[in-house]
Image (cartoon, rainbow, N blue to C red; front, side, top):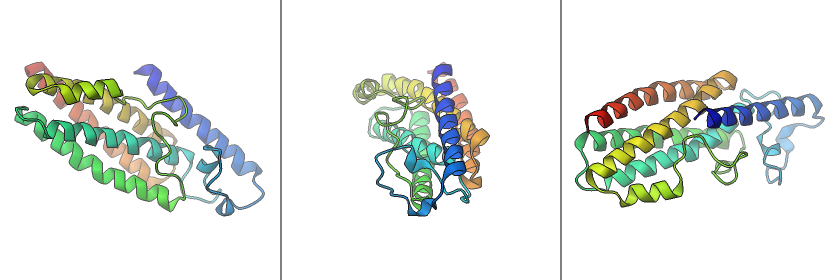
Length: 205
């Protein structure tokens, strides 16, 4: 967890540093930039007068697929018979909270003229996002049934939430856009509480 957290922080720090350099040397307005540029980092440079920074962009681009996987995991559980009611209730709440947040972050990126599907496990600098479940582990969750599936879901989602919290804390420390920071704080509060809930469910299962 610590290595992945440091990786996320390093990615954001690099993006912020590059954005600062670009702001200091740019001679033409970024509104006229080619958004089809082949350089991923160049498309992440906000206008010098913008109310957001590279950390806000990176956070949104990373958190969208991160949330999308949480929704997918929740859907997998909700489609299974014989899952304890407490676990299906949690999956329902996770999906209900995170699906609208995906739309919210997508809207910000569109407003900022930034790619909304850029940060995936394969294209993101560093090769992956903190807490993301591997394809192999996701297949195990799909195949599991009953109590085994419930325990696997809880274990995987705890790690998944911890990754989201790490990214959210980096945004709180480095971000500039007030709404993005507010969302990051809400993610920290909600997911820390859900982690405690999941740990209790595991302890009593």
